Image (cartoon, rainbow over all chains, first blue to last red):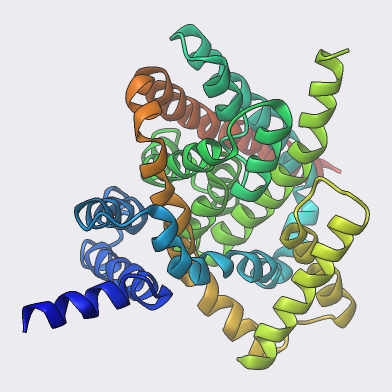
Length: 240
Length: 119
């Protein structure tokens, strides 16, 4: 009986099916806990799922690439889901139009603070150049941040991880920071989460309200747009 | 649902084509998002099927970040070596970003609406 089980494991561990199924099961388990805890941000399902999966992969000696072969089907959905952000935004266009000046002002200040604070703190505490360059685009959505990181001389895959951790920090802390500052407008709450914590912030904002989610979506799209134009420009200016 | 999913993929594909075709630094899905928004404005409304699919998908948006997040295991040694600057920069930097963005937007919103009432 035992050799057969090993055969089954050897077979399954090389197909994408196992990685995908495990990823979905772990996430649903984490989401169930999150829901039972009344969407307490400290129990966000993303860091919990990531931690459980890293332990599972380490214990079973599964390389990340093997896991990703299965999980890439979930990863792929990020594309169409980003496009889908236009849908909840549409009914809020009127409100967005009335808030053009606040949105642009907040975007510029937020973007400068995001890059400046991360690089400045990392520099003060003696981070390596590679780490500093990889950390600079941390608040931008992962695919763009990775592209920027590559262009300015960071490590794209490290940037992807830092972007993810930033998202986790953002979704866990946003509620407390915004409540402390007595910010009640869902448009402002959503927008600031979107600027700081990209798509993960959007996911969290949607759990709060459609309006917060839609404004977080606008924030992510504008941050992506602005940084994909401004980073290469800054680099060009500094390397002259 | 199939129709709506096709619509989303078509817009993403158009976005990718524009992004690569013109060598733009903006990723395809972000351009697809802008194109879909323009299409909805021209159409003056969201088809019910697209609304249901998009809402359902976005409810599970966070699941889609898990695979890339697991990539943390590849960088464990660098993270171990530089954990202090990385942790402080990410945590403090993110808190500051949220706070500054919210305060600026809130202030401008109030200023802006007051000016409007006076006008």
